[in-house]
Length: 444
Image 1 (cartoon, one colour):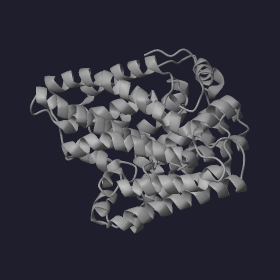
Image 2: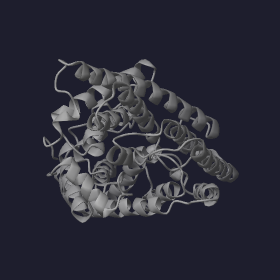
Image 3: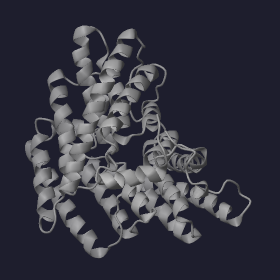
């Protein structure tokens, strides 16, 4: 990735000046605030989810629930979304609440009330079953805290961008217990640059937030419980063949999200569209309860090879479409876990096909490789995606070689065909070009 071409003023290199000390104190406070905010938002999400879908997992509860519960809960989520979006727009105005757009276009400045309101709304509707990620809310909260601290310390625009990216990464780190992955996500995906001067503050913010979340009783365990796998020549061959296919699929996914984002409802349709979309999702979730929520449950089933072949093939299409439908009708939420879940389903489907060539290949391992690969190709963050999957699963050597091979080939193909990532899909070709030039030359 590119990168020592980053602006040297992005962060102060030492603590010898008051301005430098203020920056590092802001980084530390950002981590503390992001950890507290992520814990509160995650607690609220689990409270809503357990009330709406009683039980430890939304999938188990959905399987046991009657059809009317599926439809009514999702209709309620749609009504809450429509009303909430209209109220937030009337209560507060300002720059975009999208973190990538705020960093690239507004030097990281975010409207605090509307962004935090959207984060809270996101937690509520995802808890009710919307097919988007729960990490969007902690990322927004961390970014808002960083933006407020940047105002207090009068940071330059370049340092403000870095601090806001660190805040978003710290929110993710606290929500999932991934301090290293959260830091790399902040600099590689949100800032587009891997440089030591950027990584150090991101590491401090993410480590602090993850530590705070752990002290506040967030579980210190892998998000996904998976078995131990054995490396084999068959899996390496699978990775080499699957990488290009997943790279092509990632371009389609990014363009699907681009289409959904560019056709969001306006006017009175802001109230009606999410009700219709989430009502449709509720009806689809009756035969396919795996569509509900951020996709964590179905991803874990794919990682352990417990998704039936028919369901695997149906969900690899329906999960991305459900996420795009939610996003395109104004439902707030993240794209990280939906991308990871879509990759797991795609990897599992390709593994199912590969098992005809190489019987006995573990489809769960294929799903893990697929998850990291689609995530890397859609975010254009290969290093952070590999580290995030390692931290989320608590595993490393059993799949690191095939994962790296698949990630590299998929990312090369995806970036060759389309410069956009899933986070800047809304930008025009001109804006993407300006963004890449501002970040400096990028190489693999």
